[in-house]
Length: 131
Image 1 (cartoon, rainbow, N blue to C red):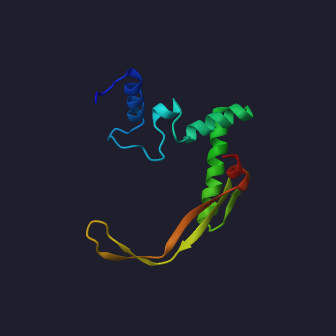
Image 2: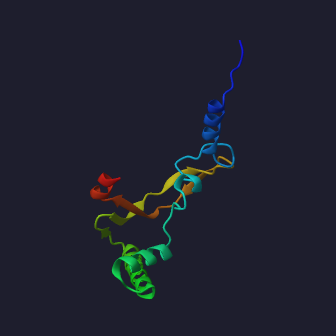
Image 3: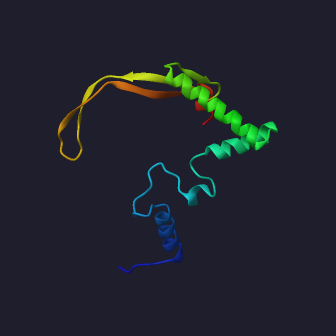
């Protein structure tokens, strides 16, 4: 039996390895710069400010003030224990977590995790349907 090596086979192998991360393993659910082009996986506040300025005709300074004010209002409401509904996006709310027993990964020691609060986000059905 003889091995046949073709350029097509070699290019298929290189395509398969091109999508792997630097450590040789496949990236799980994370987009890399080559997969998404110049777009990063996160929109920064400065990018939001620029897009608001473009869509509204406001100056960048005015749109930065508007975005900052909106974020401040949302954070203050969450800190106060209120839910914040963002139409077409979803709802941010505060959820209480119960005290529970956990395991420390390095030593397998059982530890007590105290009760606390966390921020939960429920995606709007309109956004969920458009994904």
